[in-house]
Structure formats: structure tokens, C-alpha cells
Length: 103
Image (cartoon, rainbow, N blue to C red; front, top):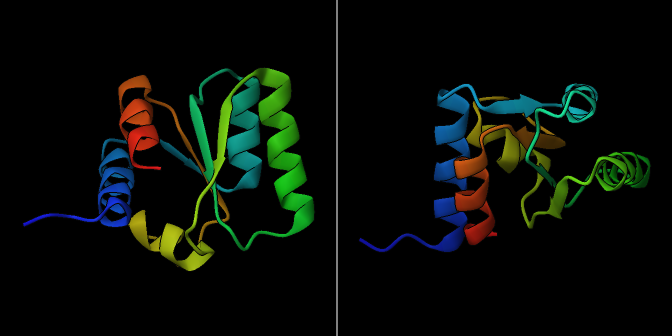
């Protein structure tokens, strides 16, 4: 059975959540970026312009890779067991590399 790249991405994000290697929400992600815990930030395609600017500015300043996904907030949230998530931060280096390959 071949998984599409989106299915693989959602599976890997769910795996990172189960491993406890995910920060969820703009506030928590930005705080963890400042603490130098986050390796990768993924945000949903339908976030507000203000949220997108805040996330991107924080990632740029602290030199963290930031990627806008083609997923909605609801889909991104469902991957981690929440109703929605505007952004997530991956704190594990190996999982972040695996997710980058699927983006």
C-alpha cells in the first residue's frame, strides 16, 4: 500500500505527537523557539496574516526552519488529536528531517 505524501506527513506528525516531541499553538511554539527547543515549525494554510507574520518573524530571528503546509487548521489539528491547530513545532531533530522530506 502506497501512502501519498500528505498521508505520510500526517502520519509522521502524529508519530511525533505520540513521542511527545510536538509543541502546539502559536504561543507555545514561539516560547519553545525562544528556548531553542524547536527544530521545525509547520503552520496551516488558513492562518491569519497576523499569526503567519508572528510565526515567520520568530523563526527568522531564531533561525528555525518554518514551512507553510497545504493543510487546513482542522487537518493539522486532527493529525495531533486536537480539534484544530494553527501551527506546530517539532522538537526532535530526526523527526523534523523526516517531516521535511514529506513537505
